[in-house]
Amino acid sequence: MTVPRHDAVPTGPSRRSVLAAAGLTAAGVAFQGSLGAASAAAAAAPAIFYSPHQDDEAIGMAGSILEHKAAGRPVYLVLVSKGENGGIAQHLNETPCFLGDKCSAPGHRHDLGWQETWPTPEVVSARTSEFNLSAKAIGVDKVINFKLSDNAYGTDSEYNTFVQAIMGKVRTLAQQYPGASHKFTAGWLDTTDPTKPTNATHKACSDAAYWLMKNGELKDVRFNHIYTYEAFSRDQRNRGADYVLNIPSSHMAKKRAAILAYNTWDPNRNLYTTGYHSVPTMLEEAYNDPREFVYALPSNYKPGRGN
Image (cartoon, rainbow, N blue to C red; front, side, top):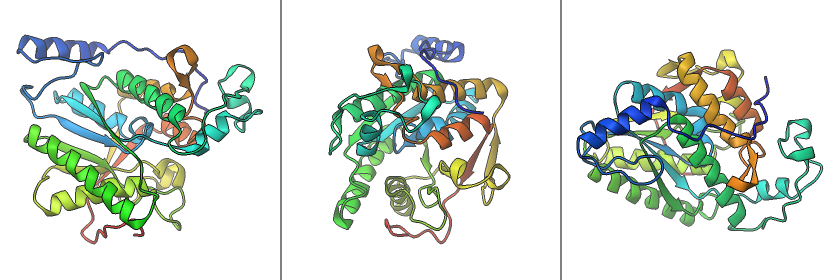
């Protein structure tokens, strides 16, 4: 089943998130922004999810986020990188669309004239609009944007600097929210082809978690496998997972709404289906597979982009 083309995604908070917000307000918690961001005064330590790019949270984390919310935990969602991507700009500057009838642009046409070279400002802006819409569909309690330039694909020095930058931001959150759990992507596994290198940005995120755990700065850490939805057939996706989350239908409906945020064409809201023009297969497979796959860091983990 293909992810439906969509021109509107529910933008209001879920009943659960409204009730959670009301309870926290009664407890004297300050709120900021449209998502009802809870401060450190929240009674329960938050579960903090780190999405390397805009769309990773919808593909492989939304069910886990909703599981934590159902357990009464406040959930904070972090966007790690800006998501600069010239390939997405190229797709949206071209007509006819390579997606064919799957494209949600009117007439499947889009000659947007976006900048295709670094730092692709239109792509960053549109992808972040989709990310924020996805976060609303899931009902997270707070969105945090690190706004880090995605230098994982630069030189080795730039990669290492990027890892250090992530570590610094995560360290600040760990100090601000003692007792929080931290959920990253399984960067050492995140590739669409197991015979090829992993996604460097995802690997940088798991490297940052590795060093912080090694230093004793993070304790409660898990990793969600994102690329499994494209790398493996459905009967192989649970391979090696420490925990397979079977997502309840009520949570799956919200996860699908989050995925639809990435296939919504609504220029008035700065929505241009950048996610679907980037990773259509992963979004489609995640839309139709009511499972997520969670890992602990392996004992033989090797940090570095090339591992």
